[in-house]
Image (cartoon, rainbow, N blue to C red; front, side, top):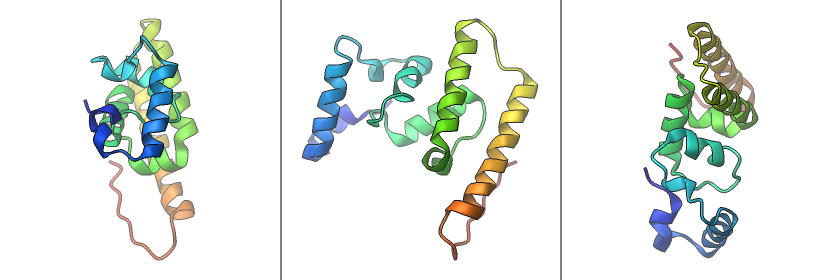
Length: 133
C-alpha cells in the first residue's frame, strides 16, 4: 500500500511540512505502514493530512465498509463516512460483524447520497452517469 512518505522527493515544501507533523504526532506508531486495514483506517479517518494514497484509501474504505465508496462521497460526505468507519471499528472490536441488512441499508444510503451529491452539489451543465447497482 502506498503512502505519502513513499513519494517524499516528489512532494512540495508544504506537503513535507504536513507529513513531518504527522510523523512527529505518531512517533513510534507508523500506522500507515501497517498491513491491517483497520489499523490504517482507525488513524487515517481522524487525520486531516492524507497519508495513505487516495486510490488505496478509497479501496480500503470500500472493502472495510463492505460497500462501494467513491471520491465524490469522500469529498462531499466525509463526516458520514468517518462515523460509519467508527461504528464498523467498534463492531469489529466487540467481535460483531455487519449483518446483511446493515450492508443493504448502507448501500441504499450510499446510492441515495451519491444521487444527492450529483444533483445538488456538483456544478451544473455536466453529465455524470453513476451505476449504483
